[in-house]
Image (cartoon, rainbow, N blue to C red; front, side, top):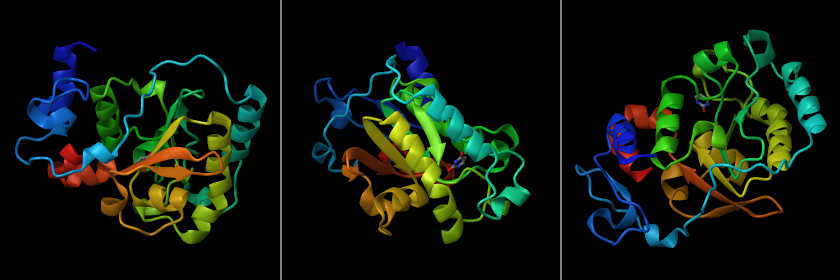
Length: 232
Ligand code: URA
């Protein structure tokens, strides 16, 4: 991505300075920083995880994907099926190295059948662009495939009913690295109730394959608290 384009994305996110990790440690020492708020994070604890924007090797079989998609589309395992407009399966590169997991569809996603297409999704997409990743280079899914009415938090029963779908998506994609955005995703994947503020900025590991998993703030939270964007 050229420098002017990157700057446009960063401007849209309210981030005023951007220094690549590999560049000499001048301003910002390799972090995205907001000039209004100097960085406080101990970023040296975080190993650099390289994600290739394109990967062609197909990891999950097409048939397994088709079966899974059909099951999600027809699911009536919890009450949410009665109020949904559409199920929201997931989107992106099915061989992605980076898988992003969010919480649940909102109104826009419920209408369009695609995760992260509303305001929070647009911010997420801009953030991906800012680190040189196109939205379709990664895979994006939610813990829940149906919208909780009024965007309330998912119930324990809803999460339990939907969990096998996310687990199967993960097993098909076998990402190199995962990113949980927000507490619901982080708590579900890491089986913890620790606050996102404490989980972020360190590497966790998911499942038997011990896939590196990072946790960060949900973009919807960043829309409410733009001063926190620099941390993400
Ligand atoms: N928030 C989420 O967690 N997921 C979406 O798909 C949209 C908003």
